[in-house]
Image (cartoon, rainbow, N blue to C red):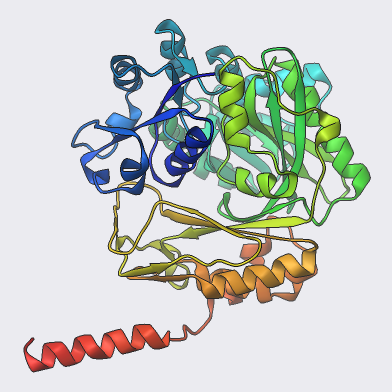
Length: 472
């Protein structure tokens, strides 16, 4: 087994990895920018090292991260998600320095990170893909010709894209002309490449993804699916496992497809194969994420498999601890991304000091976070401040438990998406599991809510006003 892991990330995922390391008897090493000096992952790790004053540069410098790992005696490096987690250069430098990268090798990351190469691999493996271009577009004129062949609506996508960025839907030649340079610009800024390709737009699909695990002995399994259809601008908000919208036959079919995809590229470690489910019940491969997902939590809740520990075991050269026949679904789990955003103001970010935070509890409730009372949420990173996860035996009960847990959570000092999620869970369409990726856009009324003042918060505000008035 590996003995000491550098965690090349921050926030809740860094805390999550630290916990897994501790249970496996591994030492954990955190890195942090000056903006993260008081972050929870820094406090919880066995060791922590500053990577500079710039909020981002250190987290995005693969050579510096590997040098630190090497200098403090780490034999493994976990990239988490985001930042460099899908950058083949980090995996390559780790291999050169004799440090185990907790993820697939650089070649697989590179192949799956290039969306056109990923499409080709899936076609060769017999996995259905969305109709689209065979390779990258050579320019706007080429895009217009291809769009006419495929038929509108189409999706322009950055070849190296991810996280919902570098994607634009076009319904006409005029929109394609308008969006082409925008996608090029987004792709260049976010991913360092101007390459884009085109796919047929599957209108209002369901977004279904499958968790996979593969080891160095050629074994690959799936841990069933997650439904990520509740999303805004291609950013996931609420994730569910398993999907309440699939039949058992569909569930088995998509799981087999995901394993086929993993074996086709010799996949090792944890990954996710993402699909679109059309209204005619056709599945189409969308992409493969070569890292642990934000929403891995709900798969853990329904299967009992600790995905991060499996990652560390695989990176240690050990075989999978479970076989496909050992994996069973138990109940339903739901994850809410508690974002520091104001849903009533076009989801504008709301960073600042957290004046009070209480995590919800009770049966079937889990919170993954890196915040605490008094912590100042820095504006340099994404708006995710906590992941609230609930589990229950069936769909109606997991919805009810989600409502209760959201109500139990107390998070003041910033605006969050908590009240918006209350509205979603109260929607009859959601409660009846009748939703697809258009849910948020087709229910704008859910952002029209009145915030009830918590009695404790109101008392605190009154006391503060009295203190100011009295000159204290």
